[in-house]
Length: 78
Image 1 (tube, rainbow, N blue to C red):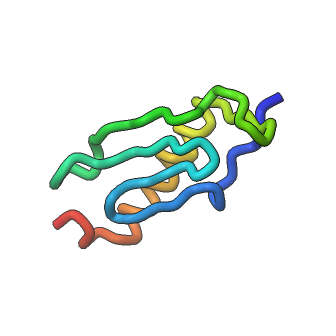
Image 2 (cartoon, helix red, strand yellow):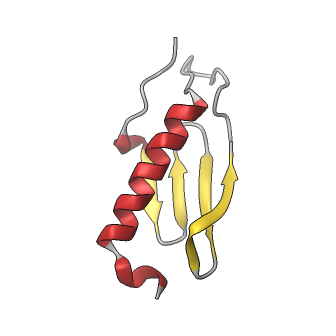
Image 3 (cartoon, rainbow, N blue to C red):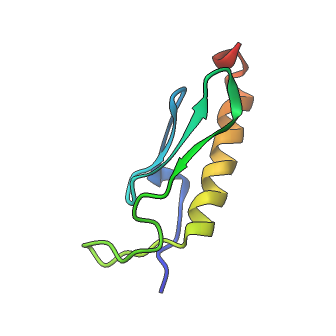
């Protein structure tokens, strides 16, 4: 059974966003915050502590939190 994905599991900075439990990351391209590189980390795998995160749910939350970050920090990429 999949472990729920919650906003508090993520670290969001100007350099990108990381899902801490799985190590999955999104790194925006220079001067292009809406495109970038995604590293899947351990999404979809059973972690050592027994947790398992659905990749689609991690990516959905990652996208939501990144959009919120860009909205709250419009000067970050100007």
